[in-house]
Length: 400
Image 1 (cartoon, rainbow, N blue to C red):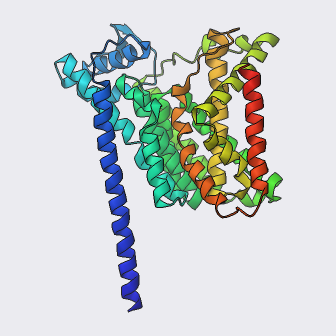
Image 2: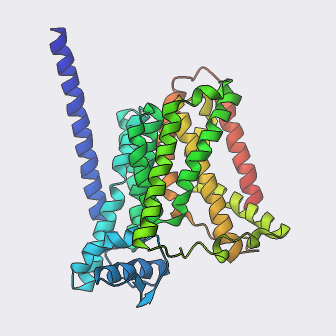
Image 3: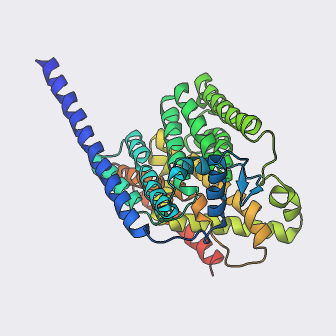
C-alpha cells in the first residue's frame, strides 16, 4: 500500500512537471509569433556592419567558395551564426528568406528559456517562481535582437546552456557535465569572441570561490579542491581547446583571427597613465550599467544575501560575477579605450553580456525565497542597504 502511494506521488510529480514544461513550450511559441509580428518589416542590413559579415560569409559558404564578404576574403573566425544561416540560403526569394530567418531568430532566442527553466530547478525554485522567471526573460527587451541578423540570436541559447551544464557540474561534481559545458562554451566562442571570458571566468572561479568561503565561513580551501572537481575543470578546458584547435587547423587552415592583432589586443593602448585610468573608468561604467540593466535588485540582492544562500547558489553567483567583471574589463580594454578614449558618455555594449544578466532573475527569486526563511535575522536587511548604498554612491560618481 505504501509502495502504491509512493508510485502515485511520483506519477503526480511527473504529470505536474510535464504540464509545466508544456506551458513553457506554449509560451515559447507565443513569444516567437509575437516577436515575429513585431519585427516583420522590410529590412536593409545597414544598422550593424556585423549583419553584412554574417550574411555574406553564410552565402559564400553556401556557394562553396572561401570565407568571403562582398567577394573579398575575411579573417573573421567567429562565424557560428553564419553556419546557422546556411540552410536559409536555399530560399531563392531574398525577401522571404529574411522573413524566415527573422522567425527562426525569434524561435532560437525564445528557446533560451528551456535551460533557464532547468537552472531554476537546479536552484530549487518554487513552481510559481520558475514560471515567473521564464515569463520575465521572454519579455526581456534585449530579445528584440531577433529582428536583426546578429550573432546574439545564437549566442543567447549557447551561453545559457553553458551555464546550465556548469551549474549541473558544480552541484553534482560529475565530470560528464563538464564535457557538454566545454562544448557549448567553445560554440559560444565560435559565435562571439567575448565568450573567451567563459573559460577564463571558470579558472578565476576556482581561485576566488575557495577564498570567499575561507573569509566568510572559515572553510579550509583544500576541502573545496577534490579530484572530481579539478578533473572537471581540466576536461572543460581540454574540450574548449580541442574545439579551438580543430577549427583553427581544419576550418581556418591556420589563418590569423581578425581580432588577434595589435590594434585590438596590443598593450600600447594602455601604456600611458591617462589611458589606464580611462580604461578603469570604462570598466566601472560598464559594471554600473550592467547592474542597472538587470533592474538593480537582482544583482544587488543576490550579493547582499550571499552568505545566507546555499552552496550551489553561492557558486553560481561567484562565477557570474567573475564573468561579468571579466567581460566588462575585456570590452573596456579591447574596444572602449581604443575607440572612445576621452568620451564621458560611453557606448554600452550590453548585447555582449545581456544573456548573463538574465540569469540573475532566477537568482533574485532564490534570494527572496531565502529571505522568507531567515526573516527573523535582521542582519540581511543591513546587508541589502549596504550593497545598494555602495552601488548608488558609485552610480552617482560615474554618472554625475
